[in-house]
Amino acid sequence: MDEIKVAIADDHQIFRKGVILSMRPYSNIKFVMEAENGDDLLNKIPEANPDVILCDLKMPVKDGIDTTKIITKSFPNIRVIILTMYEDERFVGHLMDCGAAGYLLKNTEPSEIRKAITDVMRTGFHLNPFVNKVLIKKNYAKQKFNPSLTSEVVLSEKEKEVLTLVCLEFTAHEIAAKMSISARTVEAIKDRLMERFGVKNSVGLVFHAMKNQLID
Image (cartoon, rainbow, N blue to C red; front, side):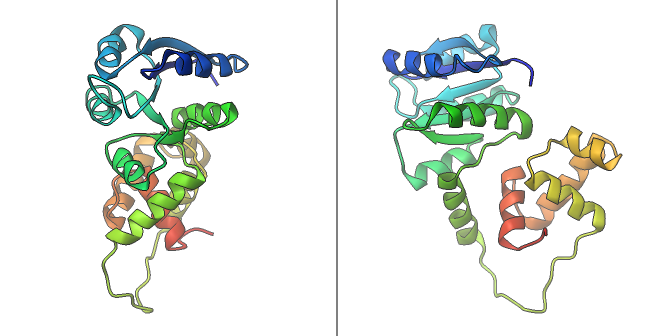
């Protein structure tokens, strides 16, 4: 994978330096900026132009929640990974709704942080067991319907193939190459599936497919 430019926002300098040091073995990850709060981060983004931001939640001046909302709206190509001490399911669901691409705890191993960075660059999101559990529960809570054994979701072969490859974390361009169709067609199929399933993004597609056993 090409070089990934990463920024980190955390009000503890020692923690920031520790994360940066832990990523040094991975030559494709380059830290281009540090920030000590949300405002500091937002001010530095235009010049540093990071691909991925590791962002703490509890910071002075502007916290990670408000900062994530602004970044995902103003800089949609930048992926935000929350890196926090808060192991609270409510935060996970809310941050993913706000546009965060991943949620990690501060005791995460460096190899997992590296995987999260590369995952969000490849597929737009990073999932781990903690996030999986929260999103599945959240998805179930939203589903208010009377189950019927006669109702069945019928997918075309092309829709099923796209959905399967999305679940395997392939990007739209990679799916297009595998299926010999255009990336625009892939995105159109994904949009159609998201509308049918009532989900907002690829993460929602993955969990709807898993929950309803739509792929083999």
